[in-house]
Image 1 (tube, each protein chain N blue to C red):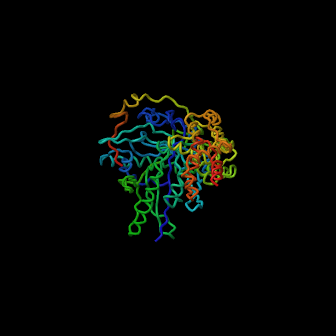
Image 2: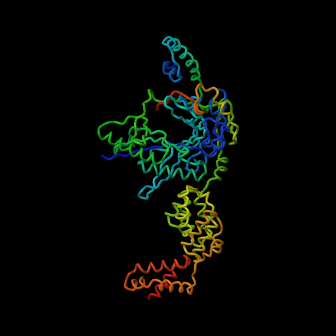
Image 3: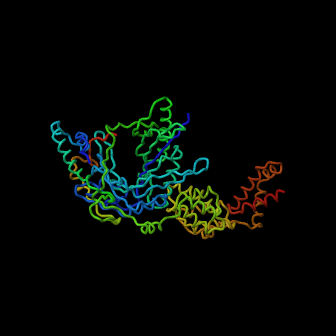
Length: 96
Length: 474
Protein backbone atom coordinates (compact mmCIF):
# COMPACT_ATOMS: atom_id res chain seq x y z
CA UNK A 1 0.00 0.00 0.00
CA UNK A 2 1.21 3.52 -0.76
CA UNK A 3 1.98 6.16 1.83
CA UNK A 4 -1.07 7.59 3.61
CA UNK A 5 -3.09 10.40 2.07
CA UNK A 6 -2.35 13.72 3.63
CA UNK A 7 -4.16 13.80 6.95
CA UNK A 8 -6.39 16.79 7.61
CA UNK A 9 -5.23 17.39 11.17
CA UNK A 10 -7.67 20.24 11.78
CA UNK A 11 -10.60 18.09 10.74
CA UNK A 12 -9.50 15.17 12.90
CA UNK A 13 -9.01 17.54 15.82
CA UNK A 14 -12.48 18.95 15.29
CA UNK A 15 -14.01 15.45 15.34
CA UNK A 16 -12.29 14.92 18.70
CA UNK A 17 -13.41 18.38 19.86
CA UNK A 18 -9.79 19.45 20.36
CA UNK A 19 -8.54 22.96 19.84
CA UNK A 20 -5.07 23.07 18.31
CA UNK A 21 -2.76 26.04 17.85
CA UNK A 22 -1.14 26.47 14.41
CA UNK A 23 2.21 25.27 15.77
CA UNK A 24 0.60 22.12 17.14
CA UNK A 25 -0.99 21.32 13.79
CA UNK A 26 2.41 21.62 12.11
CA UNK A 27 4.04 19.38 14.74
CA UNK A 28 1.26 16.74 14.70
CA UNK A 29 1.02 16.49 10.91
CA UNK A 30 4.18 14.38 10.35
CA UNK A 31 3.66 12.47 13.60
CA UNK A 32 0.13 11.34 12.66
CA UNK A 33 1.24 10.45 9.16
CA UNK A 34 4.08 8.39 10.57
CA UNK A 35 1.71 6.49 12.88
CA UNK A 36 -0.83 5.77 10.17
CA UNK A 37 1.95 4.87 7.77
CA UNK A 38 3.31 2.37 10.28
CA UNK A 39 -0.09 0.67 10.64
CA UNK A 40 -0.45 0.62 6.89
CA UNK A 41 2.41 -1.82 6.66
CA UNK A 42 -0.28 -4.38 7.41
CA UNK A 43 -1.59 -3.71 3.93
CA UNK A 44 1.49 -5.47 2.54
CA UNK A 45 0.29 -8.81 3.88
CA UNK A 46 -1.51 -11.17 1.58
CA UNK A 47 -4.87 -11.79 3.32
CA UNK A 48 -6.60 -13.49 0.45
CA UNK A 49 -9.03 -16.16 1.65
CA UNK A 50 -8.83 -14.97 5.26
CA UNK A 51 -12.17 -13.89 6.72
CA UNK A 52 -12.22 -10.41 8.24
CA UNK A 53 -12.62 -10.49 11.99
CA UNK A 54 -13.73 -7.83 14.44
CA UNK A 55 -12.19 -9.55 17.45
CA UNK A 56 -8.95 -11.24 18.31
CA UNK A 57 -10.48 -14.06 20.34
CA UNK A 58 -12.79 -16.74 18.90
CA UNK A 59 -15.64 -16.20 21.38
CA UNK A 60 -19.20 -15.31 20.47
CA UNK A 61 -22.71 -14.99 21.91
CA UNK A 62 -21.85 -13.60 25.32
CA UNK A 63 -25.26 -12.61 26.62
CA UNK A 64 -26.90 -11.44 29.81
CA UNK A 65 -30.34 -12.58 31.04
CA UNK A 66 -33.04 -9.89 31.00
CA UNK A 67 -33.06 -9.43 34.78
CA UNK A 68 -33.28 -6.13 36.63
CA UNK A 69 -30.23 -5.18 38.70
CA UNK A 70 -29.98 -2.36 41.23
CA UNK A 71 -29.37 1.08 39.74
CA UNK A 72 -27.08 3.75 41.08
CA UNK A 73 -28.53 5.82 43.87
CA UNK A 74 -29.77 9.08 42.33
CA UNK A 75 -27.57 11.29 44.50
CA UNK A 76 -24.53 9.19 43.70
CA UNK A 77 -25.36 9.43 39.99
CA UNK A 78 -25.52 13.22 40.20
CA UNK A 79 -22.50 13.85 42.42
CA UNK A 80 -20.09 14.44 39.55
CA UNK A 81 -22.45 16.76 37.69
CA UNK A 82 -20.98 20.29 37.54
CA UNK A 83 -24.56 21.57 37.34
CA UNK A 84 -27.88 19.91 38.11
CA UNK A 85 -31.47 21.02 38.19
CA UNK A 86 -34.69 19.12 38.90
CA UNK A 87 -32.77 15.87 38.97
CA UNK A 88 -31.20 16.44 35.57
CA UNK A 89 -27.68 17.02 34.31
CA UNK A 90 -27.45 20.61 33.10
CA UNK A 91 -25.61 21.34 29.88
CA UNK A 92 -25.32 24.47 27.72
CA UNK A 93 -28.55 25.11 25.86
CA UNK A 94 -28.99 22.64 22.99
CA UNK A 95 -29.95 24.40 19.78
CA UNK A 96 -31.33 22.20 17.03
CA UNK B 1 -45.98 17.54 -15.09
CA UNK B 2 -46.61 14.45 -13.00
CA UNK B 3 -44.27 13.67 -10.15
CA UNK B 4 -43.61 10.44 -8.31
CA UNK B 5 -42.65 10.51 -4.63
CA UNK B 6 -40.21 8.00 -3.13
CA UNK B 7 -40.33 7.78 0.62
CA UNK B 8 -38.31 5.57 2.93
CA UNK B 9 -38.81 5.27 6.67
CA UNK B 10 -36.40 4.51 9.49
CA UNK B 11 -38.63 3.34 12.30
CA UNK B 12 -37.20 3.08 15.81
CA UNK B 13 -39.15 0.66 17.95
CA UNK B 14 -38.60 0.10 21.66
CA UNK B 15 -38.28 -3.62 22.38
CA UNK B 16 -40.34 -5.07 25.21
CA UNK B 17 -37.57 -6.05 27.59
CA UNK B 18 -37.49 -5.61 31.34
CA UNK B 19 -34.00 -4.14 31.29
CA UNK B 20 -31.83 -1.96 29.09
CA UNK B 21 -29.80 -3.42 26.25
CA UNK B 22 -26.39 -3.39 27.94
CA UNK B 23 -27.13 -3.16 31.67
CA UNK B 24 -29.66 -4.29 34.28
CA UNK B 25 -31.43 -0.92 34.72
CA UNK B 26 -35.21 -1.20 34.24
CA UNK B 27 -36.90 0.21 31.15
CA UNK B 28 -40.12 1.20 32.92
CA UNK B 29 -41.53 4.54 31.79
CA UNK B 30 -42.11 7.60 33.94
CA UNK B 31 -39.53 7.25 36.73
CA UNK B 32 -38.08 10.47 38.20
CA UNK B 33 -35.11 11.74 36.12
CA UNK B 34 -31.82 9.87 36.45
CA UNK B 35 -33.04 7.13 38.79
CA UNK B 36 -32.79 4.26 36.28
CA UNK B 37 -29.11 4.75 35.60
CA UNK B 38 -25.85 2.97 36.34
CA UNK B 39 -22.18 3.26 35.34
CA UNK B 40 -22.88 1.47 32.02
CA UNK B 41 -25.73 3.63 30.73
CA UNK B 42 -24.12 6.79 32.12
CA UNK B 43 -21.04 5.99 30.05
CA UNK B 44 -18.52 5.87 32.91
CA UNK B 45 -15.03 5.07 31.69
CA UNK B 46 -14.25 1.40 32.11
CA UNK B 47 -17.87 0.28 32.53
CA UNK B 48 -18.51 -2.72 30.31
CA UNK B 49 -21.69 -3.38 28.33
CA UNK B 50 -23.30 -6.85 28.46
CA UNK B 51 -25.75 -7.79 25.73
CA UNK B 52 -29.36 -8.47 26.77
CA UNK B 53 -30.27 -11.82 25.16
CA UNK B 54 -33.97 -10.90 25.08
CA UNK B 55 -33.29 -7.88 22.82
CA UNK B 56 -31.79 -10.24 20.25
CA UNK B 57 -34.64 -12.75 20.51
CA UNK B 58 -37.33 -10.06 20.11
CA UNK B 59 -35.57 -8.55 17.09
CA UNK B 60 -35.23 -11.95 15.45
CA UNK B 61 -38.95 -12.62 16.09
CA UNK B 62 -39.74 -9.26 14.48
CA UNK B 63 -37.58 -10.18 11.52
CA UNK B 64 -39.39 -13.49 11.11
CA UNK B 65 -42.80 -11.79 11.26
CA UNK B 66 -41.68 -9.25 8.67
CA UNK B 67 -40.29 -11.83 6.26
CA UNK B 68 -36.64 -10.92 6.80
CA UNK B 69 -33.64 -13.15 6.40
CA UNK B 70 -31.98 -13.68 9.76
CA UNK B 71 -28.29 -12.91 9.48
CA UNK B 72 -26.31 -15.91 10.76
CA UNK B 73 -23.39 -13.67 11.77
CA UNK B 74 -23.95 -10.25 13.23
CA UNK B 75 -21.90 -7.78 15.25
CA UNK B 76 -22.16 -4.50 17.12
CA UNK B 77 -20.42 -1.31 16.03
CA UNK B 78 -19.63 2.08 17.47
CA UNK B 79 -21.17 5.11 15.80
CA UNK B 80 -19.18 8.13 16.91
CA UNK B 81 -20.67 11.59 17.34
CA UNK B 82 -21.04 14.23 19.99
CA UNK B 83 -24.38 15.10 21.45
CA UNK B 84 -25.19 15.90 25.08
CA UNK B 85 -27.85 13.18 25.37
CA UNK B 86 -25.26 10.48 24.62
CA UNK B 87 -22.83 10.12 27.52
CA UNK B 88 -20.20 7.89 25.86
CA UNK B 89 -19.90 10.14 22.78
CA UNK B 90 -20.66 7.07 20.72
CA UNK B 91 -23.77 5.00 20.25
CA UNK B 92 -23.52 1.22 20.12
CA UNK B 93 -25.41 0.20 17.00
CA UNK B 94 -24.95 -2.15 14.05
CA UNK B 95 -23.31 -1.05 10.82
CA UNK B 96 -22.59 -3.62 8.13
CA UNK B 97 -23.89 -6.80 9.80
CA UNK B 98 -27.40 -6.13 11.08
CA UNK B 99 -29.50 -8.90 12.67
CA UNK B 100 -32.09 -9.00 9.87
CA UNK B 101 -32.00 -8.34 6.13
CA UNK B 102 -34.74 -7.78 3.55
CA UNK B 103 -38.40 -8.57 4.16
CA UNK B 104 -41.44 -6.40 3.70
CA UNK B 105 -45.02 -5.61 4.62
CA UNK B 106 -48.02 -5.80 2.35
CA UNK B 107 -50.28 -2.78 2.72
CA UNK B 108 -53.79 -2.24 1.41
CA UNK B 109 -54.26 0.89 -0.71
CA UNK B 110 -57.39 3.06 -0.81
CA UNK B 111 -58.67 1.26 -3.94
CA UNK B 112 -58.38 -2.10 -2.15
CA UNK B 113 -55.30 -3.24 -4.06
CA UNK B 114 -52.21 -4.55 -2.26
CA UNK B 115 -48.68 -3.19 -2.39
CA UNK B 116 -45.51 -4.55 -0.85
CA UNK B 117 -43.27 -2.11 0.96
CA UNK B 118 -39.82 -3.66 1.07
CA UNK B 119 -37.53 -3.59 4.08
CA UNK B 120 -33.80 -3.07 3.78
CA UNK B 121 -32.75 -4.25 7.21
CA UNK B 122 -33.43 -4.33 10.94
CA UNK B 123 -30.64 -3.63 13.39
CA UNK B 124 -30.49 -3.15 17.14
CA UNK B 125 -29.03 -0.19 18.98
CA UNK B 126 -29.25 1.70 22.24
CA UNK B 127 -31.51 4.71 22.75
CA UNK B 128 -30.08 8.02 23.94
CA UNK B 129 -31.14 10.20 26.88
CA UNK B 130 -33.96 12.73 26.89
CA UNK B 131 -33.43 16.50 26.69
CA UNK B 132 -35.47 19.09 28.51
CA UNK B 133 -35.07 22.72 27.69
CA UNK B 134 -34.84 25.49 30.25
CA UNK B 135 -34.49 29.17 29.31
CA UNK B 136 -30.73 29.35 29.32
CA UNK B 137 -29.72 25.71 29.55
CA UNK B 138 -30.82 22.17 28.77
CA UNK B 139 -31.32 19.29 31.19
CA UNK B 140 -30.55 15.65 30.47
CA UNK B 141 -32.36 12.62 31.88
CA UNK B 142 -30.50 9.38 31.13
CA UNK B 143 -33.30 7.00 32.21
CA UNK B 144 -34.03 6.27 28.56
CA UNK B 145 -30.35 5.98 27.58
CA UNK B 146 -29.57 2.36 26.78
CA UNK B 147 -33.17 1.33 26.15
CA UNK B 148 -33.10 -1.36 23.45
CA UNK B 149 -34.34 -0.18 20.08
CA UNK B 150 -34.63 -1.94 16.79
CA UNK B 151 -34.36 0.27 13.75
CA UNK B 152 -36.48 -0.94 10.86
CA UNK B 153 -35.33 0.59 7.58
CA UNK B 154 -37.59 0.48 4.51
CA UNK B 155 -36.78 0.72 0.85
CA UNK B 156 -37.95 3.99 -0.80
CA UNK B 157 -41.12 2.14 -1.92
CA UNK B 158 -43.66 4.42 -0.27
CA UNK B 159 -45.30 6.81 -2.72
CA UNK B 160 -47.58 8.97 -0.58
CA UNK B 161 -48.48 10.10 2.91
CA UNK B 162 -51.40 7.64 2.88
CA UNK B 163 -49.09 4.75 2.07
CA UNK B 164 -46.70 5.79 4.86
CA UNK B 165 -49.64 5.80 7.27
CA UNK B 166 -50.86 2.39 6.07
CA UNK B 167 -47.34 0.98 6.45
CA UNK B 168 -46.92 2.32 9.98
CA UNK B 169 -50.31 1.02 11.06
CA UNK B 170 -49.64 -2.43 9.62
CA UNK B 171 -46.20 -2.48 11.25
CA UNK B 172 -47.60 -1.43 14.61
CA UNK B 173 -50.26 -4.13 14.42
CA UNK B 174 -47.74 -6.86 13.62
CA UNK B 175 -45.29 -5.83 16.34
CA UNK B 176 -48.09 -5.64 18.91
CA UNK B 177 -49.29 -9.10 17.87
CA UNK B 178 -45.86 -10.57 18.28
CA UNK B 179 -45.55 -8.98 21.73
CA UNK B 180 -42.11 -7.65 20.76
CA UNK B 181 -43.01 -4.05 21.67
CA UNK B 182 -45.75 -2.22 23.51
CA UNK B 183 -45.75 0.18 20.53
CA UNK B 184 -47.13 2.85 22.83
CA UNK B 185 -46.69 6.09 20.87
CA UNK B 186 -47.39 8.34 23.85
CA UNK B 187 -44.44 6.78 25.66
CA UNK B 188 -42.20 7.19 22.62
CA UNK B 189 -42.06 3.44 21.85
CA UNK B 190 -42.15 4.15 18.13
CA UNK B 191 -40.46 7.09 16.43
CA UNK B 192 -39.46 7.51 12.85
CA UNK B 193 -37.29 9.45 10.47
CA UNK B 194 -38.84 10.11 7.08
CA UNK B 195 -36.68 10.34 3.96
CA UNK B 196 -38.50 11.69 0.94
CA UNK B 197 -37.75 12.72 -2.59
CA UNK B 198 -39.74 13.40 -5.75
CA UNK B 199 -38.89 12.84 -9.42
CA UNK B 200 -40.70 13.65 -12.66
CA UNK B 201 -42.70 10.69 -14.03
CA UNK B 202 -40.55 8.86 -16.52
CA UNK B 203 -37.29 9.66 -14.77
CA UNK B 204 -35.56 6.58 -13.38
CA UNK B 205 -33.13 8.24 -11.01
CA UNK B 206 -34.46 9.18 -7.57
CA UNK B 207 -34.54 12.88 -6.75
CA UNK B 208 -32.53 14.53 -3.97
CA UNK B 209 -33.93 13.54 -0.59
CA UNK B 210 -34.65 15.44 2.58
CA UNK B 211 -34.93 13.90 6.02
CA UNK B 212 -37.56 14.63 8.66
CA UNK B 213 -36.23 13.58 12.06
CA UNK B 214 -37.87 12.08 15.09
CA UNK B 215 -41.56 12.03 14.19
CA UNK B 216 -43.53 10.44 17.02
CA UNK B 217 -47.15 10.38 15.85
CA UNK B 218 -48.61 8.74 12.75
CA UNK B 219 -50.78 11.79 12.14
CA UNK B 220 -47.66 13.95 12.31
CA UNK B 221 -45.93 11.75 9.73
CA UNK B 222 -48.97 12.01 7.45
CA UNK B 223 -49.24 15.78 7.70
CA UNK B 224 -45.49 16.41 7.45
CA UNK B 225 -45.11 14.11 4.48
CA UNK B 226 -48.10 15.58 2.62
CA UNK B 227 -46.55 19.00 3.10
CA UNK B 228 -43.01 17.92 2.23
CA UNK B 229 -43.96 16.12 -1.00
CA UNK B 230 -46.02 19.12 -2.15
CA UNK B 231 -43.18 21.49 -1.19
CA UNK B 232 -40.61 19.54 -3.19
CA UNK B 233 -42.87 19.38 -6.25
CA UNK B 234 -43.63 23.08 -6.14
CA UNK B 235 -39.92 23.84 -5.69
CA UNK B 236 -39.08 21.82 -8.83
CA UNK B 237 -41.95 23.35 -10.79
CA UNK B 238 -40.63 26.81 -10.00
CA UNK B 239 -37.35 25.69 -11.58
CA UNK B 240 -35.62 25.38 -8.20
CA UNK B 241 -33.75 22.43 -6.81
CA UNK B 242 -34.01 20.37 -3.63
CA UNK B 243 -31.20 20.64 -1.13
CA UNK B 244 -30.17 17.50 0.70
CA UNK B 245 -30.92 18.53 4.27
CA UNK B 246 -32.55 17.62 7.53
CA UNK B 247 -35.85 19.35 8.11
CA UNK B 248 -38.04 19.68 11.15
CA UNK B 249 -41.85 19.44 11.22
CA UNK B 250 -43.50 22.40 12.95
CA UNK B 251 -46.82 20.90 13.98
CA UNK B 252 -48.43 24.21 14.97
CA UNK B 253 -47.53 26.04 11.78
CA UNK B 254 -48.06 22.92 9.66
CA UNK B 255 -44.80 23.34 7.73
CA UNK B 256 -41.38 21.69 7.50
CA UNK B 257 -38.37 23.91 8.15
CA UNK B 258 -34.71 23.43 7.31
CA UNK B 259 -32.71 22.77 10.47
CA UNK B 260 -29.54 24.72 11.03
CA UNK B 261 -27.33 22.94 8.54
CA UNK B 262 -24.32 21.12 9.95
CA UNK B 263 -20.97 22.51 8.96
CA UNK B 264 -19.83 19.23 7.51
CA UNK B 265 -21.46 15.95 6.57
CA UNK B 266 -21.75 13.39 9.36
CA UNK B 267 -18.61 11.39 9.83
CA UNK B 268 -19.58 8.63 12.23
CA UNK B 269 -16.32 6.64 11.93
CA UNK B 270 -18.04 3.33 12.54
CA UNK B 271 -15.82 0.58 13.85
CA UNK B 272 -16.49 -2.80 15.51
CA UNK B 273 -17.44 -2.47 19.18
CA UNK B 274 -14.49 -4.01 21.01
CA UNK B 275 -16.44 -4.60 24.25
CA UNK B 276 -19.11 -6.83 22.69
CA UNK B 277 -18.56 -10.13 20.94
CA UNK B 278 -20.11 -11.24 17.65
CA UNK B 279 -23.62 -12.71 17.58
CA UNK B 280 -23.92 -16.02 15.77
CA UNK B 281 -27.41 -17.43 15.25
CA UNK B 282 -27.86 -21.04 14.23
CA UNK B 283 -30.85 -22.21 12.25
CA UNK B 284 -31.79 -24.45 15.20
CA UNK B 285 -31.91 -21.45 17.55
CA UNK B 286 -34.00 -19.39 15.15
CA UNK B 287 -36.40 -22.30 14.61
CA UNK B 288 -36.76 -22.72 18.36
CA UNK B 289 -37.60 -19.01 18.79
CA UNK B 290 -40.00 -19.12 15.85
CA UNK B 291 -42.26 -21.44 17.85
CA UNK B 292 -43.36 -18.39 19.85
CA UNK B 293 -44.69 -16.63 16.74
CA UNK B 294 -48.39 -15.81 16.80
CA UNK B 295 -50.79 -16.00 13.89
CA UNK B 296 -50.35 -12.67 12.10
CA UNK B 297 -53.22 -10.16 11.71
CA UNK B 298 -53.61 -10.59 7.93
CA UNK B 299 -53.92 -14.38 8.24
CA UNK B 300 -56.13 -14.20 11.30
CA UNK B 301 -58.56 -11.87 9.52
CA UNK B 302 -59.04 -14.40 6.74
CA UNK B 303 -59.44 -17.28 9.19
CA UNK B 304 -61.95 -15.39 11.34
CA UNK B 305 -64.06 -14.69 8.25
CA UNK B 306 -64.18 -18.37 7.30
CA UNK B 307 -64.40 -19.82 10.84
CA UNK B 308 -67.18 -17.56 12.09
CA UNK B 309 -68.80 -16.35 8.89
CA UNK B 310 -68.35 -12.69 9.83
CA UNK B 311 -67.93 -9.96 7.17
CA UNK B 312 -64.48 -8.63 6.19
CA UNK B 313 -65.20 -5.34 7.94
CA UNK B 314 -65.91 -7.07 11.26
CA UNK B 315 -62.85 -9.28 10.93
CA UNK B 316 -60.74 -6.18 10.25
CA UNK B 317 -61.97 -4.31 13.33
CA UNK B 318 -61.73 -7.31 15.64
CA UNK B 319 -58.31 -8.53 14.50
CA UNK B 320 -56.65 -5.11 14.76
CA UNK B 321 -55.80 -5.85 18.39
CA UNK B 322 -54.66 -9.31 19.44
CA UNK B 323 -56.37 -9.20 22.84
CA UNK B 324 -59.62 -8.05 21.24
CA UNK B 325 -59.42 -10.82 18.64
CA UNK B 326 -58.78 -13.36 21.41
CA UNK B 327 -61.80 -12.02 23.32
CA UNK B 328 -63.99 -12.24 20.25
CA UNK B 329 -62.93 -15.78 19.41
CA UNK B 330 -63.45 -16.94 23.00
CA UNK B 331 -66.98 -15.45 22.89
CA UNK B 332 -67.82 -16.54 19.36
CA UNK B 333 -67.12 -20.21 20.01
CA UNK B 334 -69.70 -20.17 22.83
CA UNK B 335 -72.61 -18.58 20.99
CA UNK B 336 -74.97 -19.96 18.40
CA UNK B 337 -74.62 -16.92 16.16
CA UNK B 338 -71.02 -15.60 15.95
CA UNK B 339 -72.19 -12.50 14.02
CA UNK B 340 -74.15 -11.51 17.14
CA UNK B 341 -70.92 -11.77 19.17
CA UNK B 342 -69.18 -9.60 16.60
CA UNK B 343 -71.97 -6.99 16.77
CA UNK B 344 -71.92 -6.90 20.55
CA UNK B 345 -68.16 -6.52 20.79
CA UNK B 346 -67.80 -3.99 17.96
CA UNK B 347 -70.57 -1.73 19.19
CA UNK B 348 -71.49 -2.15 22.85
CA UNK B 349 -68.18 -3.39 24.26
CA UNK B 350 -65.93 -1.14 22.19
CA UNK B 351 -68.07 1.94 22.90
CA UNK B 352 -67.57 1.26 26.60
CA UNK B 353 -63.82 0.89 26.15
CA UNK B 354 -63.62 4.22 24.34
CA UNK B 355 -65.89 5.95 26.86
CA UNK B 356 -63.93 4.74 29.88
CA UNK B 357 -60.44 4.61 28.28
CA UNK B 358 -60.11 0.93 29.07
CA UNK B 359 -58.40 -1.89 27.24
CA UNK B 360 -60.14 -5.18 26.56
CA UNK B 361 -57.94 -6.82 29.19
CA UNK B 362 -59.52 -4.64 31.88
CA UNK B 363 -63.10 -5.64 31.12
CA UNK B 364 -64.80 -7.52 33.99
CA UNK B 365 -67.20 -9.45 31.75
CA UNK B 366 -65.56 -12.68 30.67
CA UNK B 367 -66.16 -14.02 27.14
CA UNK B 368 -68.21 -16.84 28.72
CA UNK B 369 -70.44 -14.33 30.55
CA UNK B 370 -70.92 -12.23 27.43
CA UNK B 371 -71.72 -15.36 25.42
CA UNK B 372 -74.42 -16.29 27.93
CA UNK B 373 -75.98 -12.84 27.63
CA UNK B 374 -75.94 -13.05 23.83
CA UNK B 375 -77.52 -16.51 23.94
CA UNK B 376 -80.31 -15.21 26.19
CA UNK B 377 -81.15 -12.65 23.51
CA UNK B 378 -80.89 -15.21 20.72
CA UNK B 379 -83.21 -17.53 22.63
CA UNK B 380 -85.61 -14.58 23.05
CA UNK B 381 -85.52 -14.96 26.84
CA UNK B 382 -84.74 -11.26 27.02
CA UNK B 383 -85.06 -8.52 24.42
CA UNK B 384 -82.20 -6.35 23.21
CA UNK B 385 -82.92 -3.24 25.32
CA UNK B 386 -83.05 -5.42 28.45
CA UNK B 387 -79.84 -7.12 27.42
CA UNK B 388 -78.14 -3.73 27.13
CA UNK B 389 -79.29 -2.91 30.67
CA UNK B 390 -77.93 -6.18 31.97
CA UNK B 391 -74.72 -5.53 30.09
CA UNK B 392 -74.34 -2.23 31.98
CA UNK B 393 -74.73 -4.04 35.29
CA UNK B 394 -72.29 -6.76 34.28
CA UNK B 395 -69.81 -4.22 33.00
CA UNK B 396 -69.80 -2.49 36.37
CA UNK B 397 -69.59 -5.58 38.55
CA UNK B 398 -69.26 -8.69 36.40
CA UNK B 399 -71.67 -11.52 37.15
CA UNK B 400 -73.86 -14.02 35.41
CA UNK B 401 -76.48 -12.77 32.96
CA UNK B 402 -78.92 -15.57 33.76
CA UNK B 403 -78.81 -14.78 37.46
CA UNK B 404 -79.27 -11.06 36.90
CA UNK B 405 -82.32 -11.81 34.73
CA UNK B 406 -83.78 -13.98 37.48
CA UNK B 407 -82.95 -11.64 40.34
CA UNK B 408 -84.41 -8.60 38.62
CA UNK B 409 -87.34 -10.36 36.96
CA UNK B 410 -86.16 -9.17 33.56
CA UNK B 411 -87.11 -12.19 31.50
CA UNK B 412 -88.88 -11.22 28.34
CA UNK B 413 -92.63 -11.86 28.27
CA UNK B 414 -93.38 -13.97 25.22
CA UNK B 415 -96.64 -15.28 26.57
CA UNK B 416 -99.24 -14.14 24.04
CA UNK B 417 -102.01 -14.08 26.64
CA UNK B 418 -100.10 -11.78 28.99
CA UNK B 419 -99.10 -9.43 26.19
CA UNK B 420 -102.60 -9.38 24.81
CA UNK B 421 -103.84 -8.08 28.14
CA UNK B 422 -101.32 -5.28 28.04
CA UNK B 423 -102.22 -4.47 24.43
CA UNK B 424 -105.86 -4.14 25.43
CA UNK B 425 -104.88 -1.85 28.26
CA UNK B 426 -102.85 0.36 25.93
CA UNK B 427 -105.69 0.59 23.43
CA UNK B 428 -108.23 1.42 26.12
CA UNK B 429 -106.06 4.14 27.61
CA UNK B 430 -105.44 5.91 24.28
CA UNK B 431 -108.68 6.18 22.34
CA UNK B 432 -107.58 9.30 20.47
CA UNK B 433 -104.35 7.75 19.25
CA UNK B 434 -106.22 4.65 18.16
CA UNK B 435 -108.64 6.83 16.20
CA UNK B 436 -105.71 8.68 14.59
CA UNK B 437 -104.19 5.38 13.52
CA UNK B 438 -107.41 4.16 12.07
CA UNK B 439 -107.66 7.48 10.25
CA UNK B 440 -104.34 6.66 8.52
CA UNK B 441 -101.71 8.15 10.83
CA UNK B 442 -98.92 5.52 10.76
CA UNK B 443 -96.87 7.18 13.48
CA UNK B 444 -99.62 6.52 15.99
CA UNK B 445 -98.89 2.80 15.75
CA UNK B 446 -95.33 3.30 16.95
CA UNK B 447 -96.65 5.30 19.88
CA UNK B 448 -98.93 2.46 20.87
CA UNK B 449 -96.08 -0.07 20.65
CA UNK B 450 -94.13 2.22 22.93
CA UNK B 451 -97.03 2.26 25.40
CA UNK B 452 -97.16 -1.55 25.41
CA UNK B 453 -93.41 -1.76 26.10
CA UNK B 454 -93.78 0.81 28.86
CA UNK B 455 -96.69 -0.99 30.52
CA UNK B 456 -94.69 -4.26 30.37
CA UNK B 457 -91.70 -2.50 31.95
CA UNK B 458 -89.69 -3.22 28.81
CA UNK B 459 -90.13 -6.95 29.10
CA UNK B 460 -92.62 -7.62 26.29
CA UNK B 461 -91.26 -9.42 23.28
CA UNK B 462 -91.36 -6.49 20.81
CA UNK B 463 -92.14 -8.63 17.77
CA UNK B 464 -95.06 -10.27 19.52
CA UNK B 465 -96.34 -6.92 20.82
CA UNK B 466 -96.26 -5.57 17.28
CA UNK B 467 -98.09 -8.52 15.90
CA UNK B 468 -100.83 -8.53 18.52
CA UNK B 469 -101.35 -4.80 18.33
CA UNK B 470 -101.73 -4.95 14.57
CA UNK B 471 -104.25 -7.76 14.89
CA UNK B 472 -106.30 -5.89 17.50
CA UNK B 473 -106.38 -2.67 15.53
CA UNK B 474 -107.23 -4.72 12.44
